Length: 222
Image (cartoon, rainbow, N blue to C red):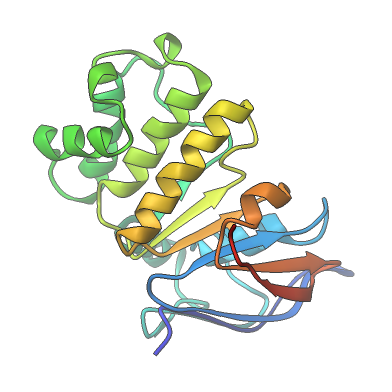
């Protein structure tokens, strides 16, 4: 059984089909990239996979459960328990330290654990910046705090939306290296990106155009 299966989903707004009969499967341990131009349906797909929205038609099977008809309250719990979200805009609390920002995610899931939060920061190379506020961190460091926050509750899927979109080349490479290590460790990754260099590091790339899957590419990283 696939960890995630999207079956013939469509998302319709009036006369606009943001997604049109899209299907895909993600197995445990996969690394999938979703690409496409602006308006292709990437963000809509992320919102549905990430349990932030529901399709108009079709099914989303996550870990054996159809979540496409769940209530908003139930989706919040699914998102909290099974999905680690990484955003292009970092969404850090500006008056909390890096460590506290990671612990916030624990608070909504279970019980904050400073030792576990510090271990998550160590995984992304930021143990020495744990007591710094977001304003004292570079863009790349802030994104790595976001990755640590996404990891802290051991999600089934790590879902990243343009995770390198606000980063320079050096920090982009650092984030990609973290993703490589996470994948090596067995994490399941779905990365939504417009950047071909980010997409080609994944095992497979799905390209969306006009709300449909235009093609699938199996990547062979050099």
